[in-house]
Amino acid sequence: MAFEVVVPQMGESVLEGTIVEWKVAKGDKVKVNQPLVEIMTDKVNVELPSPVEGVMDDILAQPGEVVPVGKLICRITVTGEKPTPAADKPAKSASSAPAPAAAPPASAPSTSGAAPKMTPAVRKLARDFGLDPATIAGTGPEGRITAEDVQKAAAARSAVAGVSAPSKPAPAPAPAFSPAPPAPGQRAEERIPLAGARKMIADHMRRSRQISAHVTTFEDCDFTALVEYRNAMKEQFLAAYGVKLTYMPFIIKAATECLKQFPTVNASMTDTEIILKKYYNVGIAVARDVGLIVPVVHDADRKSIVELAVALDDLGKRARTDQLKLDEVQGGTFTVTNAGMFGATASTPIINQPQVAILGVHNIAEKPVVRGGQIVTRFMSTFGMSFDHRLIDGHTAVQFLHRLIEYLEYPASMFLSSH
Image 1: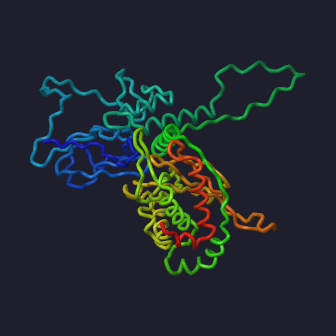
Image 2 (image 1 turned 90 degrees about the horizontal axis):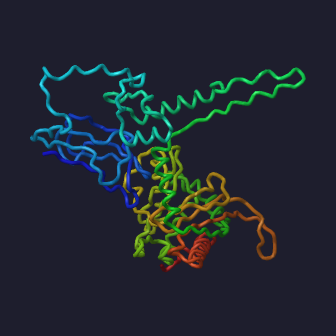
Image 3 (image 1 turned 45 degrees about the horizontal axis):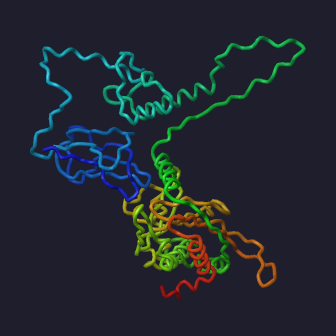
């Protein structure tokens, strides 16, 4: 019996993934829970394990191919069963079968006149680059063109375009009395495929803008009390717990208190329902070379400042080294993104679907402000909270942000909350 493996649901907002690499080949023996294939989503890379023991009978999706949730990607013949016969290869006797033609070398495109072999995803990639598949050398099995082949061909074309001579004939020499204009500088271009993590992030951001009615509200926060506390405690904290004390644990702690008081901010919605979440999972945006990822601190309201600091340090390190597990990027109910660590003073963050709000934290800097009629210096930051106006009214968003800032300006107050 052939067991059919399909792309599983990999998160509440994940609709598709990209095949990165098959860990086994057709004909290989596989064991239960042995990794079969690596699939990349906009959240995390996932290795799908084999649900059965047997032999890989057929692989139906190639590296680089985008596969939606529920799509059949391979078949495994369960141990003790016969492999499924290939329906698209009718049997022929050895005497009547013509000798196969020699395959063209991988370094040159096929000139046989037959349509180049490639997956629909790779064909679309070639079309996006404006490349003729017949001119691309295939390095895959049986001369199949892979996504990497297309990328190399596009890169080679761009390199040539950057240094090639103009196609038009050179103009006649200018008269002696007219100085020749300077030669134009090179206008080289590099074309990079919109693929992988970057493409999925782009799709996720575009969908969010199309789904939610984005509005952003801003308010300044006086961090002076927290700055003084952190400066007094950071060395002791590092020695005791092995992680640096940052402002983010305090922001998350204050946010969870506010989420309990303003339940529509900790929600999601469909066309017919508002879903109020009774748990508080806070996502923290982490920058990586390949693109942003949002690991989630589950049950953040139940964690102390110390526990939050340790959890954030661990998630951040593993996010940057692609070691997060699937459940660590799922289930978020509210997100915090810290553009301030890069020096930003304000921004309008995009909501992380299917959530309805996201808090943008910005640079903390010493600034002159008026206190009691006097100009004094305080450590100030600007918060920007984007919210979905379909569900959250403006006054609710403003009250939420104002309460959050009250907690941070007077840290002891958040621990006295009765919520």
